[in-house]
Length: 331
Ligand SMILES: Cc1cc2nc3c(=O)[nH]c(=O)nc-3n(C[C@H](O)[C@H](O)[C@H](O)COP(=O)(O)OP(=O)(O)OC[C@H]3O[C@@H](n4cnc5c(N)ncnc54)[C@H](O)[C@@H]3O)c2cc1C
Picture 1: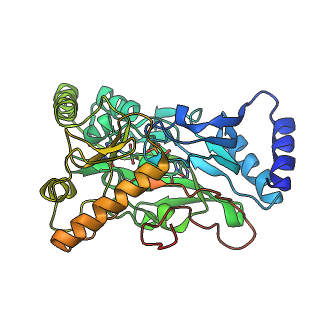
Picture 2: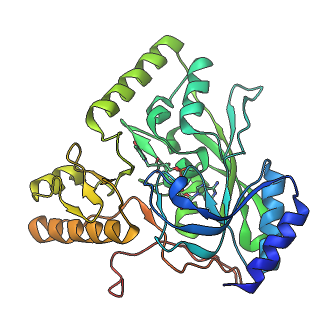
């Protein structure tokens, strides 16, 4: 256990006596995959200034926070993360119209709420996001998308706190370097997303609502929403569909432990009961290897598996990224 982390927890508790700070919190309660053990601490600051101050205190102790949105794309290790201070954006939920008609949203606003707010204000372009269960912060990190829309299409600017420099930056869309299910923030690490501005087209509220209803009914029809998952397990490989390749490889319903390729939608890995991160990791590897052997197409996971024993130390110019790499032969 990290001694400096214990000191940082004490200091943060003193600085924010009223803040929700859970210790040794079981992350399977928070993650949509319902997998994972406890993190040492999970704080939910109620404003962006408090979040920045928490980051400063952690940095004084040579630590960085593990930022979490709605945990709908994140799988925690079974044994937990005893050296990690996690920060949830669940209470960063300011959402309003700016005088020029753009939407301001803090990182913790759910994508469903953002899409609904846009619809209620007769603004079109975020309909695709209404059924994605993530937050604005997580959605921007991942450049989440569906039905031909992506976060990058409507975001105008993003405010982030850059941990190595302890500085706020406002980035425009180009600077965010969005790519398919990726962004500058995802590639670089060390960026805490605080808020974003969305610029949308005027549209007819009822037509926007109808589009959202249509997308959501398609989701209910095609996706295994009754079982815990992270949505699509793999990114779409260029020129193919991951779900079709997995199906053609004969893997529909294939399971390892509690993790299973969904019977309903081969692009989803579901927790059919009692899945561990190890099961999910083994299943992703098996699927990737099988698909590669059959079709010579490499599948890249979309869901994020946090490595066991992870520590987020901030001792240098960059905070390391934290992902399990399926190519790592030692895992
Ligand atoms: C049923 C289901 C359906 C889904 N459908 C879709 C879909 O159609 N399209 C799609 O793209 N995705 C989909 N997803 C996946 C997921 O909802 C998205 O990737 C979403 O954008 C993740 O948001 P989150 O807030 O849950 O992120 P989290 O899982 O909490 O975090 C994701 C990553 O972002 C980081 N992060 C989160 N917030 C911040 C912040 N404020 N600052 C810095 N880093 C941060 C985390 O550290 C992590 O690396 C689906 C998931 C489920 C369960």
